[in-house]
Amino acid sequence: MAQQRMALWEADIDEDVDLQFAIGNYGQSGHFEDAHIQQPQIDEATLLAMQQHMAQQAAFSQIPDVVKAFIVHFHQAVLDNNLAEITVAYESGWNKYTEKFYSRTEWPEAEVIAPLVNDDPVFLILYRELYYRHVYSRLQPNIDDRFHSYENSCELFNYLLNSEGPVALELPEQWLWDIIDEFIYQFQVFCTWRSKVKSKTEDELMVLAEGGQVWSSYSVLNVLYSLIQKSRINEYILAQQEGKSPEQIAEIVGEYGQRPLYRNLGYFSLIGLLRVHVLLGDFTLALKVIENVELNQKSPYTRVTACHVATYYYVGFCYLMLHRYPDAIRTFVNILNFIMRMRQYHTRSYQYDQISKTADRMYALFAICNALSPSRLDDNVANTSKERFGEQFAKMARGGYVARQS
Image (cartoon, rainbow, N blue to C red; front, side, top):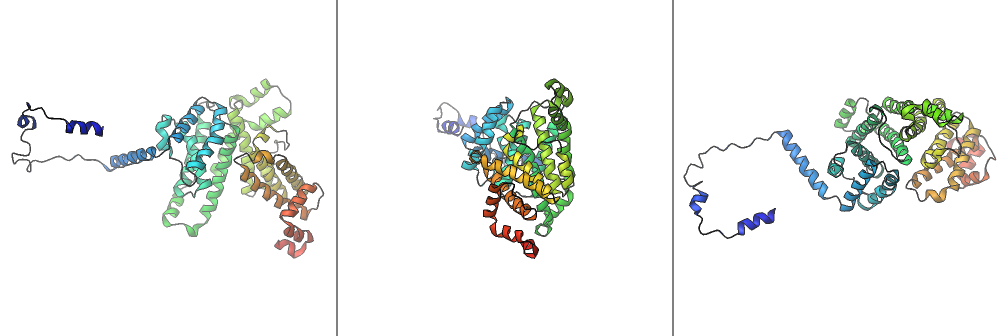
């Protein structure tokens, strides 16, 4: 456009044109200074909207072309419910471009990339879920991030639970588990952050006071119980254990429970509820919640390794806190042997670090249980635990005051 304007000004003027007639005598009559010019009035809201639009355009121009193409492809895969393409984009593409472009900064905000996805509200909710998870894992969330991530989670679960009938959306099992797991994690870190009152500014304290039910335990429990009830996952598990036919199971679980999306979310919500009750200190209720879940390696959900490991970790922790040390030892041994057998596959997973940290905590808990209730259940796990916590293990084994200090 600038080149077009330049071309007009540089063009030769036709000598036959009467410039006085064409231009007139504007500003030459002496009345110009006395004329009253009505300035256009722009209200503050319009001005702010214009500034935001310009800022979004500037941010959009900064997005690398490969990232734009990735987002467009990701969106199309979600529209088509193409689980294979969604899985590749979620587990590979997102992490690849995070490392390349956004390892130390935020991804573009949802409003900035909205034109690439035709302002698709469902995809933008899913994109924000990934956006805030990145902020929590790689950066330091501020108070706005904490509140907005809660609002986005509410939008997502309202869409899933309060739409007219089951939603036409398919997501990989791993992503569904990560949604539930991250929801509880953000609740946990918000509670920790909120409890540190002395480090808060007056503005932050005021926002917290007005926050109401934001990240309250009631709202988190309500989401998890709602997903469990909507999916009828307990009825599904019992029907499978009783060997009922697919037709009978479909009749039992209803239209929501037949959909993989809701069935997976229901199961993962059971494990999430186990974790929340552990955080709240109700270990008996935590075990009661998953009484229908069979802890074995044949469960179809062992495909989601992080979920499988988390289940055993929190069950074992409950046994420890309830002084059921032999049960805790057996639980930790089973899952730690599973992790050792599957370690070669874990190294290829983007969740390898998280699984390794959970395994380290379980070795420590195993050492405590073995000191309180000595057992020869598994020498491999016992030896690994002694290698990592040799001095503490020896002190606990001796008992007495020294053991309590360790």
